[in-house]
Each structure stands twice: as C-alpha cells, then as structure tokens.
Amino acid sequence: MMSDSPPSPRAARSAPIGIYDSGLGGLSVLREIRALLPGESLLYLADSRYAPYGEKPEAFVAARTGQVCGWLADQGCKALVVACNTATAHGIQALRERLALPIVGVEPGLKPAAAASRSKVVGVLATASTLRSAKFARLLEALSGDSRFVCQGGVGLVPLIEQGDVSGPAVRDKLRGYLEPMLDAGADTLVLGCTHYPFLSDTIRDMVGDRLTLIDTGVAVARQLQRRLIEHGLAADVAADGTALPADRYCTTMEAAHLRAMAAALLGVDATAETVVIEPAPALA
Ligand code: DGL
Image (cartoon, rainbow, N blue to C red):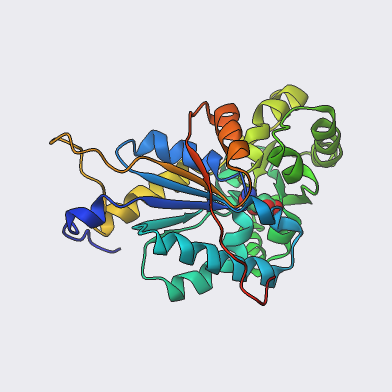
C-alpha cells in the first residue's frame, strides 16, 4: 500500500476534482462525493452531446474519454473521477498511462452484490457496451465461482433519464422487461451497473418492493477518491482562514439550461451551469 504523501502546495490542494460522465449519470456519484467531501471544489462535465456512450463503438468511447479527461486536466483539476462504467471499461487504462493525476473509475458492484445475495443469483443491469468489455469479463470470471450473474443491457434507459424521465410508463416498461427474467431466475440482488441507474432506484423499489436489494457503488467511489487524495497529499484544507474554494462548476457539451434543470430535479442543487465546447478529434467527428 502506498504511504500518504506530505501535503502538496496549497494551490494544488485547492484545485477542483473533475467528475465526468457521458451525461447526467455521474451526478449520482457527484452526490456521494459532495456528501463525503464537503470541503472539496467539484467540476462536473456531462458529455451529453455524445450520450448514450453505451450504444457507441468502443473505440469511440475510449478516444472520447481521453479527450474529455484531457480537457478536465487542462482546467486544472487535481484528480479525476470517471463516473461512467462504460468510459471506465473502455478508456481508463489508456488514461492512466497518459495523465499524471489520481484517476478513480467506476465498475459494476459485483463483489458487494455477491456478498449481499442470499440466493447467490445476482442481476446485473449495465450498458450493453460495459457488459461486452474485457474488463467486465475479467470481473465476472473472478466472481462467478460463488454466484450466478444474470446480465442484462439496459438498452434505451439512458436516453429517457437524459430527458429527465425516471419514473414514466416508458421507463417502467423497459424495466419490467429487464427485471422480470432476473426475478424468474431467482435473483434477490440487483447491481446498478451504470451511473444513470441510481436515479431509477425509487421506481425499481416501487415495482419490485423488497424482492431485490439494490447495489450502487457511489459511496464506495467517493471513499476511494478520499483515500487517493490523502495518499497524494491533495485533500483540500478545511477553510479555517475563511478562504473560499472555487465554486462548483457544472459543465455540459449540450444546453446549460437543461443541465441546470436536471441538477435541480435529480439532486436538488441550484447549479450555475455552462455549455463548453470540446471538439471531437478529427477521427471521431
Ligand atoms: N452513465 C454511464 C455508465 O455508467 C453511461 C451511460 C451511457 O451513456 O450509455 O455506463
């Protein structure tokens, strides 16, 4: 285990943490980071112009992840959270080789789900792209001895959530089609393997009651980020001298007004949102 570093210079400690997702899903991770680390300044980037990533070619997701995280690093972020399972699955390895910053990714919570399950049948709802990835295959292989995982691509859910629909008839129809086969197979636990899906938790509970224990890794990701900041001497100071950290920024590659409205609806946050332009690399255009 790495020993904790001495504190970095104050300017580095005061820099924001970049949090990135294809769209609004990463707000479910931001919510946990904000709760655990109230003294940190956050810079959220929703790449909503290109959502859903789960239905894009893997090479696109990998390249776009590198490009957007490069933009966050250029904004002076001291650490990055790739708050997207799909981008983590396809892009994080190359990112870690390229950027000299602490980078925290997310992956479907198979391990906590296997530990929580009594029936040892676990449903996994994630993007089809995450489920196809080599990273997910390795995770599945490592845990399959003890539990059976019933994996399902949540096709069509992300575009509805991006529009702010987390409980309407279209969402319920899709969820019914995805969850019933898991329940029929004996699942008692459901991994929310896409950061958009925690926003469906209330609807899922309304539909299945306590037949499924929901596993969301947002809190674990926030704790991992906290550990990495401490290890690197990058945790923000408690503002004992009254110096304010930079205000949180909520950025999107689509309409700022939509991100603002969604941050209010999903998190109850009164965010000042901005539209940013991150031109696709020529190979992606
Ligand atoms: N929120 C993302 C994830 O965790 C990606 C959803 C998408 O854009 O398809 O996988």
